[in-house]
Length: 433
Length: 90
Ligand code: HEM
Image 1 (cartoon, rainbow over the protein chains, first blue to last red):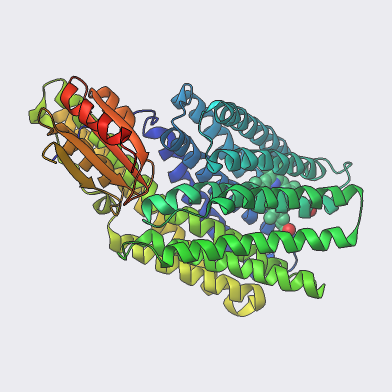
Image 2: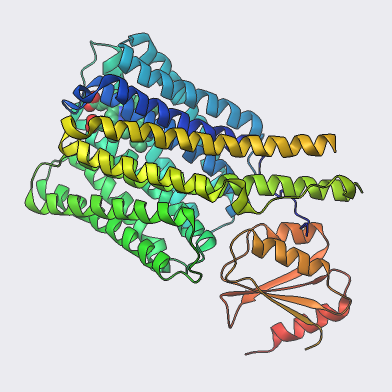
């Protein structure tokens, strides 16, 4: 049976697709840079290779896919229309691509001019996106917690990017002093504010929708995100007004909020109504284990006052929590988009009385073969475990970890681009039919 | 209730709730309405129903979280039945 389905507010396929396919390109680039440079790049927290890899992942993989997902989810979940979607997403994507690539390359090749290009492109891309998305979100009639959280996430992105640009000035111009005390704020706003709040915003909708679970408790939906935001504000104020106790309290608050989110999500998944095996479910579970571990380590550190093992926490939250979540979501978003666009093509044909040329739209689960996704999940999981071991014993585990990281990202890129090729082939079939 | 077509999509994975509802709506006979049970507010459904000239009414469900009544725009009989169901206090 063909359902008569129209796209509604959904933007053209190319709008989210270009972001989603670019993400693993940067993931692969990051992994290859690691392989190329070897374990020396981890000799301390500030090697330029490590900063390059970090931003290939946080900007090239995470921001890239999260912007793309938002362009798709805002219209579908909240009924918002994006103005001139192809044009705007095209320039936002191009600037983000150029900015992420040149920031990393500036660190790798030590070329100051590249920092300037990176800063200009990232400033352009993020301010365009934030203004467009915030304006739409402020106008939507939806009062779901997702809307508030998306707005808070956008504000956090603005703060992260502002701090990042300020920090980058000292790299592009030696006369500019490096305000390293701001780095921890920059990464907290980036990883907990922008990434954490956006993942929550999306989880509140897509976990019940795609994993067929009960909804998140309303109290939690309403307050958890605000508490995180509030803790981040407090952490920022400590820069001006240093109070050790406030810092401990904010860290505790952050850790507890993250733990509550991870455990609630785990519980919802555990008690889901239909116990079907599902690829994305594996990713969600792994992401929540990583998030809970991050929170527990953070909690014990703030209680004991010990120094955090930066690399371990970084791997847990960037690779284990954020990239895992996004990776899993890609396996829902990409097939859904392809299914949706093919179905709506069929409807157009039917409305024009060209029923004969309709094509058979495959089941959503068939668009990316389950086995291909599962192998990619295994490679991703193995690379996470090995990267965590690398954080503790770099000389032993560095190469196995990076090789698996390369494989995981290459497989993801392959799976996503195969899906796009499949879509194009179906469209060609339609055109010739 | 002869006029009622019951469709429970509350345990189905997207996009099935959407496609099955649109299919069931398309095969409604005069006087019939669709009572759709779902675990959440449906996504992308209402715009499609508008386009295909259906009327709908969403309310809190008794069995599932959300119930949606759907009938054809020009079907007065179905509309009246739905109205009487919605107006009856539980
Ligand atoms: C406009 C975009 C951005 C720019 C220009 C930028 C720039 C920078 C710079 C210059 C540093 C080095 C600071 C230092 O040497 O102390 C840094 C560190 C860092 N940034 Fe960004 N950043 C941006 C966006 C982001 C985002 C969105 C995230 C996370 C989601 C992020 C995560 C990090 C992390 C984790 C570090 C610390 C690395 C470490 O501690 O070893 N950045 N960033």
